[in-house]
Image (cartoon, helix red, strand yellow):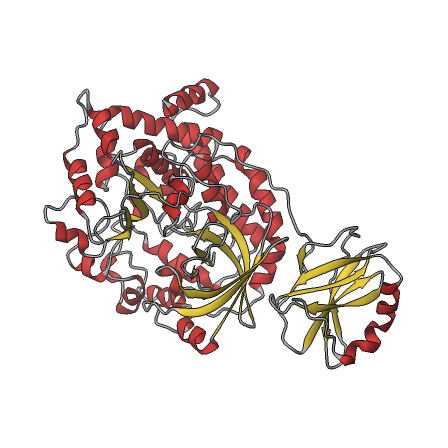
Length: 602
């Protein structure tokens, strides 16, 4: 219920406005702003200010009636004590109808974004619901409220601790206002906890859903001064007929603090599998979902990573490099036997026999894997399976029993890297970091049909999806949409401890050495004991050091950034697609692209 109480101090300020309102047709105006009790909101209509009042249920939303504007209107922030005002620096066009929920000092409400082509239809196993969670061309707002002391403890934790904070949440989009109680807030990720701007997990109570999803993640986008890498990566994954999280933008408030612009993604917890593989069927009997987490202290002690190597002792799969993200319906919680059997198949799989392709497809949805491996190269995924044996899921499809490959966590892509850019965008996939060192990738490319399909995917995708001619309009539209929110985000103080800067300082003290063993104890405390064999020390140093450098949005999007660990997003696609087509002799050869398409979809 909206309160109608207006402080007496504003009666004189709004007397004229109220008198005019009684004699005019009126509409409802609504604006989002985070205020304390010392401020109020108003709307200036043709230079006359009308009061807006705070909703009792949605405290960041301020609403009220005022006349239809003749020339335009602006929202006004008012200091209660002295009637000082902060007015929007632009004029909004007149509206004949009730406004949507607008955001203070942001000049737009909805943007029309160009779409990427659907290069492939979704793979047959995918049956994803249509959800309103991700709103193309909009940036909703999330307000979380909870005990500030607990929130401070969470923010000041060492980073390895999992601290859950009970909160309430309000979600406000252009037309919806949704409120939830009993929401759990926690820090998200591993290396993302080292950043000055932190990422968060949100878990709703058991029966609640935010547009069909119970759990979502707020991605800080802190390693990416372009703010668009994850957005573009998830768009391209979807256009490739694959499945992963989907992505949209949100603004976030936490208690009485503006936290910033975040990416919103749906995460791999129930009911995610039903939403993605069975149209949201509440009776869906899902299979096991295994998560690769690269390495833990226990697994690194025995040199085990999530590279899909085969071990003849099932306890080796429980060292921490893998997790059961979701157990199978009526399955055991700690059952790694299906994963063990799959890695055994990889180690002994046929490669040149007449039945090799059929044998592989019985165990693996090979299209899901090969398409994703093509994108790992074309998107420069520097934290994926090839480079780091990390950030992927294997889902055992019910009934069929084969595994479906799902990529995740797309922040270190498109030239944001800890490896040499020259190796990543060379166009020759054999130079890509880690290529040839992972059991599944190495073995599947020994099958001639799969190697041919993979190389044709690289050509076809480079020509028809991951090149500037296809992507730049979408990139420009997304950048235009977020530019004002990025400026707002960059003006805000951060709440994280910025451990990444300690890593940079530690690495800078290594006197230029590029040896793995030269990492001193301070750096090791940050990056851990397991370092990828093909990492580049100079690039890692640059990556850590640029976390304290301001890179303009336009430079981060277009390039040249001047950083070894960061290309411009458009620069990445230009180099990657051009070099790939040149390497395969496919530049300008339309018939080659047609042949590649036919083979890739066969």
